[in-house]
Image (cartoon, rainbow, N blue to C red; front, side):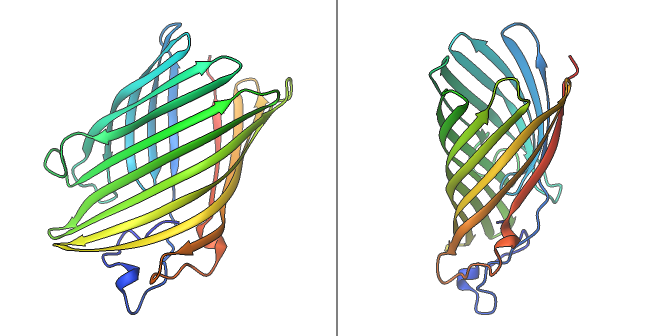
Length: 259
């Protein structure tokens, strides 16, 4: 579910190409994190995302009894090596050990519109609440990610993905496997603004997915995941894609612990 990056006119206003044009998009994330003290740690993350494109963030994390604070700067840019933009990312988590937890956070480019650092701006927000139960951690979350960029002098595009999700992490003591099942609903839009004229494309989907993490050795974990829309539709006059398999999301990874 990725809008073609070179598209400049809406499917909903096109006579020749009203069908959603799926686009193969490579994504990934690399994290390096470690402890600075008993209560303080750091995380460096480089990520490529189909909404936010390319970003690098550095955050400090402070753990205090029932609270966890995460805060730091990020730098981001698109695929055309334009001037990067900078911003702030943060998150707060409140925990009641053995009972429940909730977290909320987000990020935003510094400045207003395109006047501060570059011709693009990014915003994210997320809320999550979960519960500790025997052998399972259920949770509910809502999130949104948005990128606005000036493609041409009189053309501005905005991609926004909003998701509502329920998840369940399954684990058994002394068995080195964690399985997470997900299900939810997502709204994926692109806004085209040329001068004073605006148009929109919107694709909606009910989706399901999973991720499995296996501890294969003391310092090594491997993971694999899959997410697939099971029911999807486009807001007319845009037409939804024909094949479900064209808009799946698959991932795999490894975690290595040095100390």
